[in-house]
Amino acid sequence: MATPKRKWSKARTGRARSNWKLSVPNLVDCPQCHTKKIPHKVCKTCGYYGGKEIVKMEED
Image (cartoon, rainbow, N blue to C red):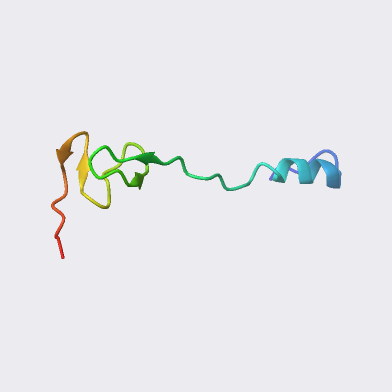
């Protein structure tokens, strides 16, 4: 197995690990029911995507 040629400093290690962070998901308004949803996905509230009903949602 390959081994590193030189030791990485603690600063360089921390700088490399700093890019492993979570990002906030981008949310858009659903054109049908105006709730927040992830873009390019079916709305969980109304079941619409692209102006068409994809998932039949049961009403309580």
